[in-house]
Image 1: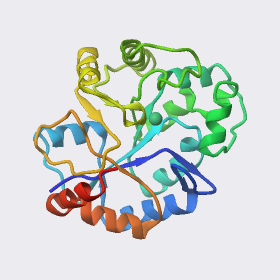
Image 2: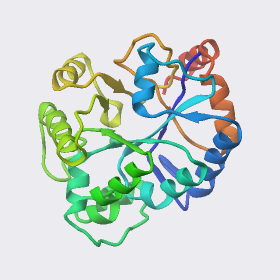
Image 3: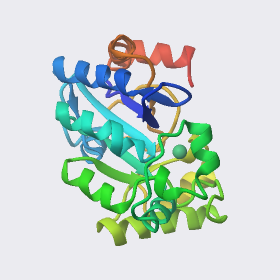
Image 4: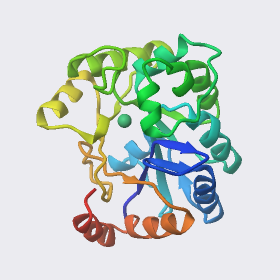
Length: 255
Ligand SMILES: [Zn+2]
């Protein structure tokens, strides 16, 4: 078997580039809840990968990248409604900047517009630590997506700084030493993997499609970019829960 890892970014009223509409997202989450799927925590997924935890056939890991504020406004109520867990990979420098603009009004901006406005309006676009705290209490996990995403919205950092500052910020704000890192834009090489391990990361998440067997392989977790409604999800889960079928599909369509 394989545990499929779903990758989301934005959830907004309208679907679009790396964006699920609220209706599509709700249809997908309803499908998981009504069909007996179990959403793992990131640490449960890590234990499964290492062969330390047996999980049911209908297990899935839901991930969100970046820490967009729409995750709190639109995705979180749906996750709560269906009693599902999810993991959000935070760009910690963005969350720090957002938290300096307390009281900023949320702007439901599509991805390209959100990026263009990010440096001026972090509080409107990114989660703040208060919202992160509320989601954590409800079982949402938060892990590393570097400190600045190499996007230079709030200054430029070396890879070592991106990793160390992200880890330090999570330790200071949430009180744990993180071992889960998701690569910004899915970009990494052997040197980056070594730097991540040096920084203290144990499990590394990519944007490559594929299967995740309980084989101890932690350097390149495969994820599937979510799109469409529950029909897309049903088909995708059927393929990527099956290591043979999922293996064939990921060769045909690696990204
Ligand atoms: Zn990202």
